[in-house]
Length: 604
Image (spheres, rainbow, N blue to C red):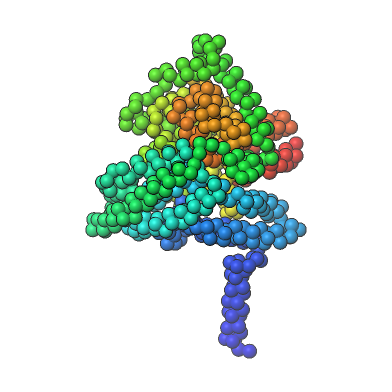
């Protein structure tokens, strides 16, 4: 055999081998377990162009076409996703544990947990509401286009217009979803649909398209592009305007008309108990959001106990501040909260000062965490305002993860709709929850862990994620970052708010409380601004069980920290504990407890 022929055969074998490897990786069971884990995430990621645009993993490699596409919301797509989950679970379980390392077995367990929950939810797949004041399509699409979609060059500007055009197809798919639920009787309460009507109407009430949020946001970012010609800017801006007129505005009108029609079939029943098999559905949501087996009764009782404990601590602080603590708690906290010294001017300048002060608080605490944390995310975090066109139905604050290509920092969104909802005594705690050392530390660090498989970088078990953020509030207070009694009252009010959530969520969905009963209980027991109370209660109504994860997660992490400190004694280092909790990313609480137990055993 000649050398030339031998090399040719060798090359052919390499090509055939690579082809077999690629085919196994893409379509069948990959040879490598780690490749399979990656494939599952890649499948999910490639299936969501909007998620790809958010995390921006592909742009550094010149792959950008997904930025002109929108997610598929069709019922047929739902069926494909479910079948893919079932197929992936079968493949995952076919890998023999004996052939895997300890870390691989752990990864297998975590992926199985997620896939099994997805599959188990098939029975209740259409029990949620795609059109709400909180996470309705109109809010999600608007926020995504005006906030997440990047416009850093001409190509991305053209993608922006493409996505506006493709909203037509996505809304047709949305209507499939809405009508299926309508047939099943899964219809939001009347008062929720009224709030949606108000949002839709407000978005299109100004006939001047150049004042529309899609146009304003797009033009502002185009104006910042110094390397794009004026002619190109004018061209894409004109296309955007025409698309807003011809596609976006008609969509909003259609959704407004449909919402008005759907209202005629709705009731004011707030809880999911009204659905067929509603009690079992609610229990499934509690298990999903708390990653425990706690029942509604157990969670309700825990909430009542925590409310009593926290209010007792607050009363002691009120007494230290000279308040008459023989007054009812509602009156007491109302008198405290009404003091004008705790509020900013109800002006544009006052709102800008709030953002400036939030950013100053972030900078302050970042300088003082060395005694508690070794890890620090590379990504920065900034406080910005919730977009004005969604702020009336948005929560008081929320976090958005940074882009993985570094083009966007982590963002703490502050809701400035009602100036009374941002008292100075509550700002420190909200900063520690949403930014540092709360969501930003946990989520940005999780994304940056190089030794985590891709699926664990993006895992988001609510009880862990929100439990960590609420735990972070406690850590900040323990470290002295709540310097005044007023600050401490603000911190405890925040924790009280989460304890009350346990009571009202289970009250609404298991005990058949009305919206008004839940509002009254939260208002009487927290002293929060009524605008916030209403927003929160309506959030729990459309997102059953989610609000229960916060307090249960926090109490679990605190209990595990105390357990480790007691067991390890003088050798306990809280920095080691925080490393353990953060480095592995989000996990179910039951698995986190096993990790802490193993850490204790290894170091005892």
